[in-house]
Length: 492
Figure 1 (cartoon, rainbow, N blue to C red):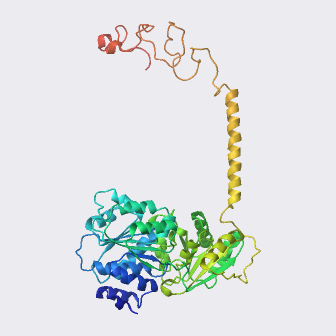
Figure 2: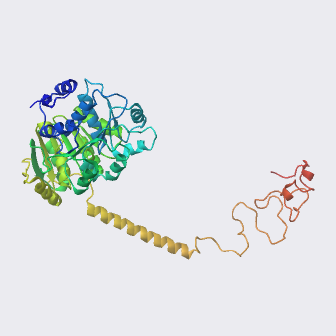
Figure 3: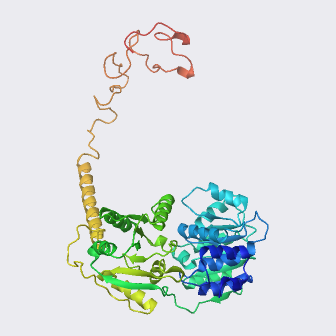
């Protein structure tokens, strides 16, 4: 059935036609009708199923014709990349309408985002943390919200955003329509749905989360040190483009450096990169400037690349849900793609958990002309056990040095200062005046570092050269009565 079955506004249908969307995906066909009726929706939808259009179209259809200047829709997402992608989809769908939107996330200046709040854009797409940053200011009022979307709710749970989401909910009206989308439904997410939704229409909750049917999946067993050479071998073959996932930011950096050294056009994207760098890397990959984009899981749910051919798990994800979201970057919108996973012996347990979750054993593949016995030129990462051993050895050396220093200080009387008689300053140290016995005369000029002697010989005992009682200097040599007297002889 075509999209026209939903009786959408003609301007939205024109936008869908421009995008080449002929008919709805299953999640769109299930979610759009109840959403258009104003009902709350709870959908368990896998990544790449077309859920962004499933929640955007009903909201946009109801926004057309409403007065402008008030933000009426708020979409909450876990990552910056996903927020930017949803805003891009919104702009594509509303190309023939006056509806506008803005993305609100960290890593960029707050000025344009503040303007979006003040001007009342129709739709705000934001991450929880940056939304809370704005809510501290008086201009960030969202009293006109009529539509709320939580996208990738389970990912927000993984990232620890659930407390932030509850704080965001305090700033928007309780009377609203809520569309709740999550790829999985763990108990904390199920509890959150009970707090947020009113008599929701549930969709696909009974279906186990699965990769898209158009994904060809395969496993490449290999020793951990040979993963980088094997990946290079795959990239030099039929792989034209690849999104490569690593376990850590450090490994992403080292892998990108390794591939670049072997003449592969590559960029990387992870949490230590600035927002400008992440945007540049993603845009360059989408436009084909880079053959490979190396990423951590921060990008697993925020990258939407048209006709992406390959997703490669350089490291096996520790959670089956992460595997599903990683490989879901390919074969999107009912297209086809390939997902390869490089598996070392120590990762077999994580792989078995993934196979159990998806209900099938993935085929093992061996590359015929790859030398699985070769010694790698360099390691991407020091093994965990070796890193722990090196840290312990370094700490032991530091403790030995600390004990030796303490013993050395004790032997030298607590710091090595020479002993001297109590109440007497050591002779010849520093630039101050030499010590003197009680009541003894001060030395004449030229001795020690003191001031030169005045014309009257020794300084008056008890008076010194201060100003007694806060007044002028004493009479005699110097300035009698506070008036300028004869200048004291001797060098200054």
